[in-house]
Image 1 (tube, protein in one colour):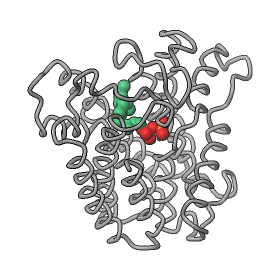
Image 2 (cartoon, helix red, strand yellow; image 1 turned 180 degrees about the vertical axis):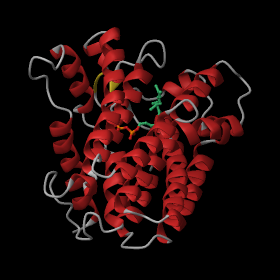
Image 3 (cartoon, protein in one colour; image 1 turned 120 degrees about the horizontal axis):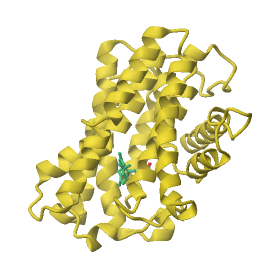
Length: 311
Ligand code: GRG
């Protein structure tokens, strides 16, 4: 199977798993329908499903599920070996962060994934609660679906909590907001923000896949390194796209960084240098990926594809 076919196939299976594992409002104890509607609105608005695909690809690398190019359907293997619940958990946390990032108190954006943002479609309080509920649901998924293997469940919960917590995703976002008020933000400030706001979730996606696959510590470290460089490359390209692509192509408002005079790789280094830096980070990610066992071809192509999306 070629790279694009496999990528699309995995992304559609993630869509299916999201539908199954983030159920619609049903039953007397499920709570108000509006919260479920808002959670699913943002999840199902689309998105590249990059983080869940990284979970699946990393798990596959270690033969769980078996090394065939096809990942078994959701319920066809014991849940402790099934990476789909972790993949969905990662997408839930990512989507929560987007919903909250778009709120008027943060980025105040109207467009996300080609649709009105959650607070535009519903209202601010509902969007805030939908984000909270998605974040909470992610941990419920891990605790429930990997319960038969408590060591694995604990490791997954701990990794995701670290990546999404105050020192990383939320810390990166906090620093980003602080840097907006600072006219002299430096490359070091920017690296801190993106290592945490962007790279942490990419790193933890690969690590969760590796944990489910039973990767040894040395390989988990390689996955972490690959994720860190891939995350930085991804963010640099995101900055380039904000400066060069239009809103329709991006599915979110383009040109916001320059308008807000935000410190980005493009502002500090210019578009060409930023593209070069993204390539350098990608090379480092590829080095770490190639040192992993198993067939790394899909992950290697994915890393390459992320870098050229800035062209
Ligand atoms: C509110 C705690 C909190 C964190 C917000 C995700 C985030 C942190 C901010 C969004 C703005 C931004 C540029 C984040 C960097 C990461 C990034 C490029 C997210 C978008 O990810 P994609 O492109 O989005 O994978 P899709 O929609 O394809 O899933």
